[in-house]
Length: 490
Ligand code: FAD
Ligand code: 2HG
Ligand code: ZN
Image (cartoon, rainbow, N blue to C red; front, side, top):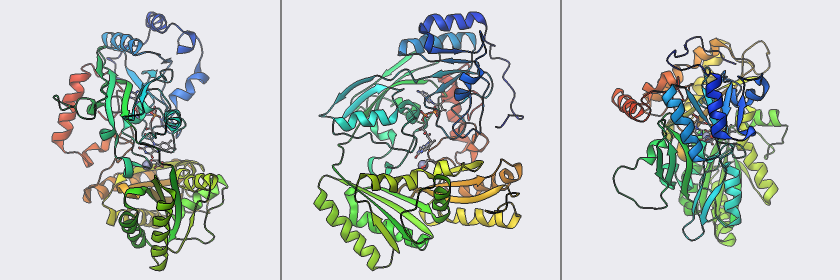
């Protein structure tokens, strides 16, 4: 794990005393609501909260608090603010930019015990729940009521809806349902001074002044703690189809995407891209067989969701005939049952994990105009071939492979450089080159995962001086003492 030689603990922040711990214990009440590394050795219990999902970032907290109500969060934050105690909000700890774990001894406020579903209305589709509800549990609940959570991602079994909001997660179906900025109708949050932002609106339309809840969507825990959300959920589609294709070039991938939009229109719910290297790595790491017999340069996963099986199948079949007939795709398979459907999705969702399976990974999450999107992967591979740092067979080389995949429908590329071990020379090859490359094409250096600690020095590649200053003003207004998720991007 990284230590942080370039960062210094901010001496303004108070070191935790036994008096502080007592205060927190009194507020929380329950024994299972606190992990207290001050009164006893709790190193192993704290590890899961200090280390991030990639085991790349590690904090040194000795205190994890798990409130179970908004009032408890409010009391805790007010105390921290009054005493200058630094705080790291945490959901499911699946974030990929080092934002979910402390840097030094910031205390962790973990939302895992706030998991009540508050209400659901099957006429409007509006769902209101605590921030700590796990995404998959929210979606399972909605499924029982014929609805779907308008966000889905590989970490659904662990990430929390509050964490999704804090990162403005994009995921696998943004193409169909749009971003959380549109779907979230209301937010309940707590500011550092204990103020409860009670904006848990259930209104689709509400133009009464500034829409302040939007500030919390994607703020990464830097201005307050989200404790509740209200979100509009679409009807769940009874007819879902998934197809997986092999294609010979990125040009053909773009042709297939154009045709999918044209021919599948309102039933298209996902269009995902995977390159050959990503699929081989997934196969190697998971041991799962790939769906197609022969190797192809690119693969796409297409999902359709609609209300009428016959209608959807007819459309999908016409589309398939067209793209095969026109030689846009080389080969393909359509899932015939739920198991096959899950297996096809696993080939896409499993890449993230596979890419770090053999040691570690450097991850970049980028918005790039579609026509140029894959050029980055080609150039990146070239760089590692030229500097001799990459070899799939030679164990002495740090880089195992460069893989490209992502949400084609949203022009969002994931560049993953799978490594055998972390190595400064690899990092130097990638940074700031990747960010410069993206800036030159007017892309975004952080499409959906946020900035956290990982991208902190690079915000200027995607935001102007003016915009960064305005963000600083918001931060000062909401968190004047700077206790919320310090050392991160703002
Ligand atoms: P955490 O990781 O705990 O926290 C993330 C950030 O939010 C931190 O800065 C934290 O301080 C803050 N935070 C958390 N909860 C709160 C709260 N209640 N109030 C205020 N701040 C809070 N992301 C995508 O966008 N699309 C994907 O497709 C996608 N796929 C993924 C697949 C895998 C296998 C993994 C491991 C991650 C993936 N992610 C994806 C990353 C993504 O950001 C998260 O999975 C998710 O949104 C984070 O939720 P979490 O509850 O785990 O939050
Ligand atoms: C995905 O789309 C996630 O699978 C994770 O956003 C991407 O691990 C990554 O780089
Ligand atoms: Zn993604």
